[in-house]
Length: 170
View 1 (cartoon, helix red, strand yellow):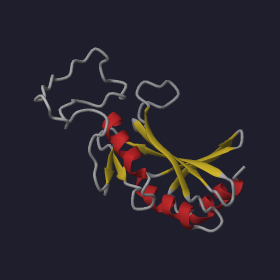
View 2 (cartoon, one colour):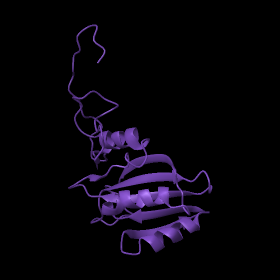
View 3 (cartoon, helix red, strand yellow):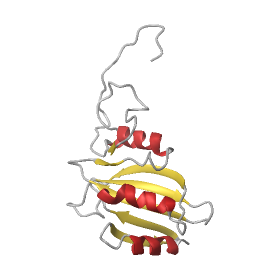
View 4 (spheres, helix red, strand yellow):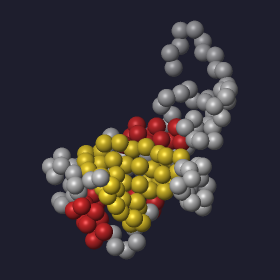
């Protein structure tokens, strides 16, 4: 259990950066405002009490059509998993990202390992990471249209056929 992490977060960001914190079966989580995303992440890494120095995972979630969420809630969540090697605790951090402006600060300056995870979330969901050093697609060819893990992406959609010259491996 990492209740101490939630306590430190609540004490440090009492000014409204935190939206909600909680624990479910020993798995602690926090929801932060999009504007505070990188500041909270940097604090979690650098604070000696939390010391969540290991970046584990980052992804996005498309909440379109989920019955458990209010209709006026932002469409996407960016989800970050962190772990403290020295303290043996973990935390899941969420931030909502609206469909009208699907962007959030990049965490690459804090954890270099976030690079490809953010690129993947950009490609699959269309979430842009502000300040990312190389935000481009990594899984499909550049001519691919759309974001295939969005819930409104049509499964029957045909993509443009791109012919390559023989012998090129781009």
